Image 1 (cartoon, rainbow, N blue to C red):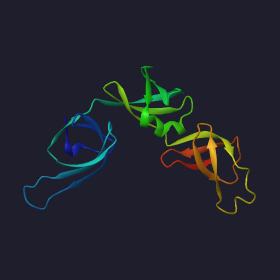
Image 2 (image 1 turned 135 degrees about the vertical axis):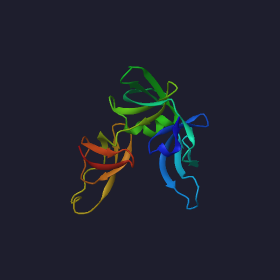
Image 3 (image 1 turned 60 degrees about the horizontal axis):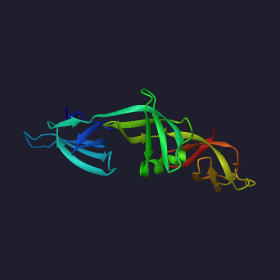
Image 4 (image 1 turned 30 degrees about the vertical axis):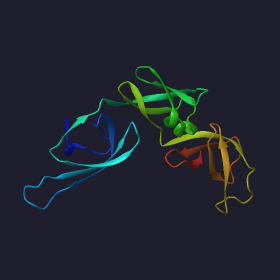
Length: 188
């Protein structure tokens, strides 16, 4: 058990039989004498994905979740819109499918290291690195004088992900992509 006053961003706690990750936290001290400090949290239910708000008193006790983050590796994609990941510590393999997999599959290349969030021996979160390097497989020919103006064009990457890239890029080039915003950063 931890006190509400010990909550901080990124911490995972147990609430309503589900692990929840703190997104944002604010402390509010009332001006009246004898008032308890209030801890206002914005958190994500890691099972449903809902973002909710809850206010605790600083003396409230909160259960810690049986949640661990471990280094993992993407092994391969399955034919039925699923992927297989391996825990780098125990070498245990996990199959991930559904919305969790479809949201990240465009960034996954064989051997990519990720962070697996494991709760009750099940993977409930997969955290991608901030940037990944992928190869452009298909794009329009490079545009003349593309460096003078900010022209972009669509490119298809080796994983099937489509995004806007600068006009000077050609097929076969490796690029860095920001996984949070799905945008081009630079050539690799």
